[in-house]
Amino acid sequence: MNNIGKNLNFRNKCIFAQIDAMRKNTTIFFYFLSIYVIAQFVWWGFHILDLTEELVGDTPRGNRRMIMIIGEGIVFLAILIFGIIRIRKSIKRELEFSRNQNNFLLSVTHELKTPIASTKLYLQTLQRRNIDEDKRQDILTKTLQQNEQLERLIDNILNATRLENKKLILHKEETNVSAFLNSIYDRYSRQYPGIVFRNEIQPDLMEQIDPFIFETIVNNLLENAIKYAGNEGKITVVLSKTDRMTVQVKDNGPGIPLADQKEVFKKFYRVGNEETRTQKGSGLGLFIARELTRLHKGQIRYYDNQPKGAVFEFVLNG
Picture 1 (cartoon, rainbow, N blue to C red):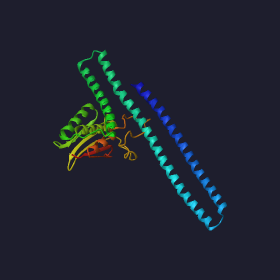
Picture 2: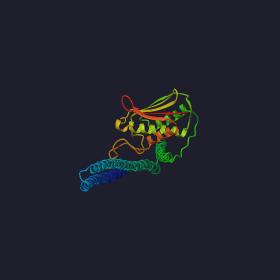
Picture 3: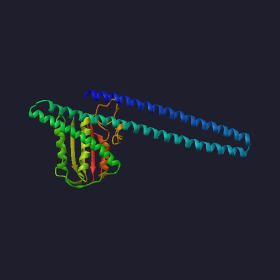
Picture 4: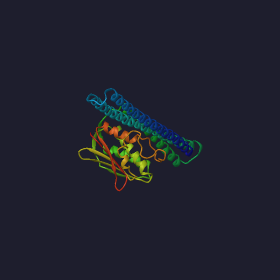
C-alpha cells in the first residue's frame, strides 16, 4: 500500500510538472503573439496615415480621410483586443479543464487501487491463515465495505456519463423517506464507528421520490462529510418538511473557503492543491449530487456550519 502511494505521488508530481510547463509555454507564446499582432497593427496604421498625408496633404478632404482612418483603426484595435481577451479566457478554461481531468484520472486511479489492494490483502489473509470465526467475520465485513466503496466510485463515474448524455430518467414512487433515510444512516453509522453520527430525521414523512436518485445524493453528501470530518468527526443528518422536503448533512470539518464555495459543485473540481491533498476523492460526488437534485426539480446549496464545518442542504420537489 505504501509503495502504491509513493508511486502515485511521484507520478502526480511528474504530470503536474508537465501541465505547469505546458501552461507556462502556452502563456508565453500567447502574450508574445498578442503583443506582436498589436504592434504590427499600430505600425501598419502609422504607415497608412503617413501615406495618406503624402497623397492628400493638409486639406479638408485629407483631414476627413485621416479622421476616418483613425476612427476605423480604433474600432479594429478594440475588436482585436476584445478577441485576444476572449481567446485568453478560452485558453485558460481549456488548460484548467485539462488540469482538472488529469486530477480526476489520478484520483480515480488511486481510488480504484486502494480498495482493490485492500480486498486482495484481506482475501490473502483468509487464504493463508487459520483464524477464529470472529476475526474471519471481521475481515469479510471489511472486504465487503471495500467492495461497496469501489462500487460507489464506479457508479459515480457511470452516473456522471449518464447525466451528461441525459440518459437518467426519473422513476418516482410514494416512499416513506424517513425510513429510507434511516436505513442509509444506519449503514454509514455501522461502517464508520469512530465517527459520531447524530440523527435528526423527522419520522413518517411520505413523499414522491426516485429512491435511486435520492440515495445517490445522500451517499455522495455523506461520503463528502466523512472525508473532511475525519475518523473522529461529527456528522448530523437532518430530515424535515414544511412546504417541501429538506435534507441536510452537517459536519464539523474545516468547511469550504469562500473562494471555493461557488466552485465545489463543478465537475472534477476539488478544494486545495492536488499535489499536497491528503483527502481521497474523484471530484464527481458534489457535481453528481447537484445534477441529480436538478433532475429531481430541486435545489442544493452549501453554507457554513457553526461554529465550524460544512452544511449541504438539498430540497426535492415531490
